[in-house]
Each structure stands twice: as structure tokens, then as C-alpha cells.
Image (cartoon, rainbow over all chains, first blue to last red; front, side, top):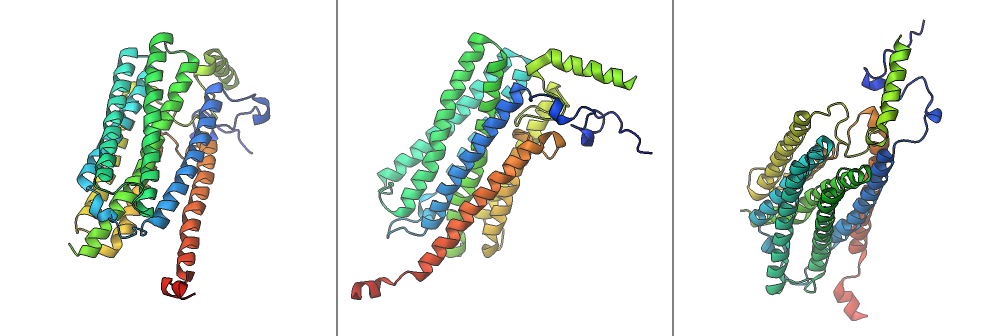
Length: 221
Length: 142
């Protein structure tokens, strides 16, 4: 009556339902274990960011008579930052494809593009911070600005560390080739870099667009 | 006959060892196992880039112009941000709803739960604390 299922490989819903029970298949490959472990780390990183987001959201109104977000943020500038980081994430994806295809020249070119775009983003952010501090809107001015510099600075710090990691990966692929362990490290780097872009989506929405959106609502435009 | 085919497949996989994985799990961020071809992979990233770019442009338009009714702007922004995070997860991180991704998605669901607890819990509690604060004039009179 119960006809055996068709070839499991043909039907995606039959994945993992082979005749051999899961307890007898042995451990997953190293690549899956490493990728999964790094994924769990990234999720814990998201949880850390959520605490920074929460403190920012709680303190956003506590300007102590200082400037509000709507007076400080330039949406056009933030849009350029966003474009740089998004394109950097895209280039990182292309590097991942080049890695699978074992095309070293393409890999190095895509990683270089990823790094340059990421560096452009970081440089824009540092410039913005310097302007704010020069205008007397540094982290010491109000609780709102403390939370702002902590949240955006924490993301910038991640990008900076990611750039160091990126350079290391380029050098290791150059020196050691597409070895298994190097490939796993590049996989983790790509996950890290894409995750930073996800955090930035939350960041430009909550910090910059909400800040400027209040200006549209309040000012009546 | 089919049984034999499958064993050959298994032997293939064992030979490839670490670089490939069995058909029951995918590492997060792994290029789509079904399409190892370069063109298909690039197409996925281009689709993701276009979708993310569109959603970003829509976010900035919603906030920067009077296109959307004022009080509705925050809701629109949150919806667009959640949508864009979904696009990033699927097209860039390759965390999908496929059965080979169950572990990754479960971990993600737990992460989202904690993030939501931290965010909404903080806002809720701090909002109530603010509401129950003694006004500064009364404090001065003490």
C-alpha cells in the first residue's frame, strides 16, 4: 500500500529522509558544522546589537537641550553610505561565487572591490562623526548622542574589523590557494559581511530615517 | 536498481569529502547546492541587489518626501526594513525555508525571539518608568 517515496534527491521535501536513519549517518561535514557555528555567533552578535538599539530607542528623546536627530542627519549622505555598503555586500557575494568556481583572479578582484567599497563606507562614517564632534554634537553632549555614537560606532567598528579580516583572506588565498580550511574561513567572512549589511538596514531605518521622518511630521514640510 | 544508483551517489559524496555536503543540510551562506553554475549564482545576487536597492529607495522616499501620510511613515519604514532584511537573508546569506535549512532557520527564529524581547521589553519597561517618574518640580520641593 504505502509505496516507497520516489528518489529523495528528486523531491526537495524528501531531503534527509533517506533509508539510513539520521543517527547512523555520522557527523555533518566540517563545512556545515563551521558554518552553523559561525551563524550562531552572528545571531548572538545581533542580540548584542539589539541591546544597543534598545538603549538608543529609549534615549532618543533625551537631548538635554542639545540638537535633535532631525537637525543633525543628512539623508542624502546616508543614502550614499547605504549604497556603498550594499554594493560591497554584492561584490562579496560575487567573490563567494568565484571561490566556488576556483577562479583566483576574479576572487581577488571581487574581494578588492568589496574592501574598497567597505572602506569608502567607513571613511564616510568617520567624516560624519568628525563633523558632528566639531559642531559640538559629540558623544558627551547628551544621552541621545551617547547612544547614537555607541550604536553607529559599534557597527563601524565591526566594519573596520571586517576589513582587516578581508585583507587577511585575500592574502591567505594568495599564499595558500583554495584549501578546504581557507574556503571555510572565506565562507565565514562572507556571512559576517552580509550580516553587517542587515544590521545597517535596521540602523539607517531606526536612526536616520526615523530621525528625519519626525522632521517631516513635526515640521509639516 | 535504484538502490544501486543511490549507493554510487553516496560513494561520490564520500570521495568529495569535506568540500561538498550531504543532501540533508546546508551551511548558512553556502552557494545554492542545486545550482553550482556560475551564471545561476550571479543571477541570484543580482536579483537580491535589485530587490534590496528598490526597498532602500522606497524607505528613503517614504521618509524624505511627503509621499506617505505622516503618521503612517514609521509603520511603512518598519515594514520596508523587515522586507529588506528578508531579502538579504534569502539572496545573500542563503538562509531559506528549504528543508536542508531547518537548523539555520530554527537558530534564526530563536535569535529573532531574543532580539524582539530585548527591544520591546526595554521600550515597554522604560516607557512605564518614564510615565511613573516624579516630576522635577515635586523633586525640588522635597
